[in-house]
Length: 603
Image (cartoon, rainbow, N blue to C red; front, side, top):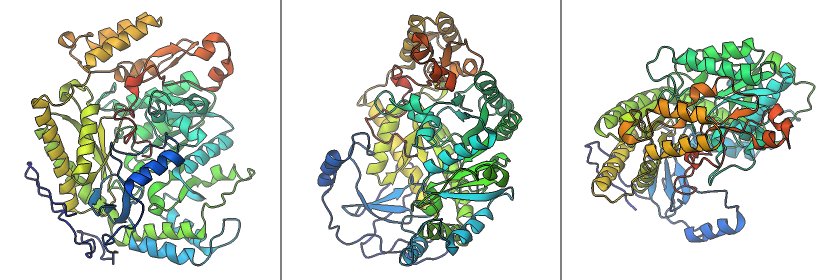
């Protein structure tokens, strides 16, 4: 099963094959030595992969998709590496769940010991929950002094919205375009990246979006304000203000945003953006929620929490995924006066904060500190960004690289200066990296962003391997195109023409004319912004006031709500079901390329 690779870029791969009796070599520049279990059990004795595929079809719903055309079956993990049933090793550059490494020995030992002691809930006393809450709070600004423990990031965000609404006695929540906050009913409404579904429309999203209002995404690649624009932070913050003014001027309970967007395409906000937004939200009477489920616990390198990179202190912070290194645990950390408003609500969580989960959480905090993993994330992240920038210079397909620490995105385009997304090429690179022994993700509204977020214990050699695999996959993609062996993607001018016709046919000739003018034409030869899609063209219009009987689809088009038009359910419009997405717009579905493969919903 030995895996050895060489790359045309000249970037070396030091990921040689491991003998099955060897242990993972965990040496890194700052990592404390720990005894790690053997890399792979000599012989996997479980069911065959084909049997598991058939069993899933029989017992699970079709909507519970798997990654890749040929699903990957994983049977063991050790730190930054995972292994399939054939014994093949993969570098995991996708899992920000096993934050400090798969089967981390300190976490495993702590959980095993706690599990053999007692497992109960928070309505009984146990010292571990108090110890862990105290240790967790030490990582936060002093104003954030109260902790609720739950089981998942979705639960945490759901509870955060409840806290905001109870405290303010208001209903309206402002979220961002392309956001992902989880899969409870409330979180599904917040997660506009889920609205298209996997095959052309999430049928229940509109019911979950009650009292939720969406502001344009601060996209520095395709948005109204681009990289380097000093007006970007305030300009995008003003769009949030406009959303409040036009949608919920007297009813804003809160604003929620990931500190760095993940599923939306690894979007790093312009400096000062959250500070400007928080000022506007608080002035309107709302509270500010920072979703740290993906980027917290030192992943950004320069700070322990993502919100710190923006120079703000939220009112509520939500934690999940990495908090227990894969063990079910999540938390809401909130200012005391907001938590006090919730005291009359009968709230408990049967498994949240149980002694075993808290033991896992303590072990994660200890490992990050003792192994200096935040500093490792900074060092390896800076090195990776350096190599990715060099990769971008060599490959015109790479339109943008962005990120912070070990949370990075590589956006692929048909032509860098056209901004035309290349989702099909992205899917092929994604698949090829798996064949080369690298697991990454993909996402973004056009499904054209390769997402890189490995365990923060990765080494310099691992970083070179990641970029080396991308280099090889991109080089092969370019060679296939030269040979005419790949099917060309539909031109952006065709998409522009479809949008133009859609607007005209649905009674929005003024927007159709605006669209044609602002894109510079509908044909490639007369379109200086060839490939620019409706998302950026209408971003400014989307944040401004619209006619009373209309609502805005920021990714698709402006249209009259069917319910409002027919008068069958006007209360939905009144209560905030502002259908942002429509199955008539498959081009906006960032998750449909390659069937169900790797659409990023699990973040």
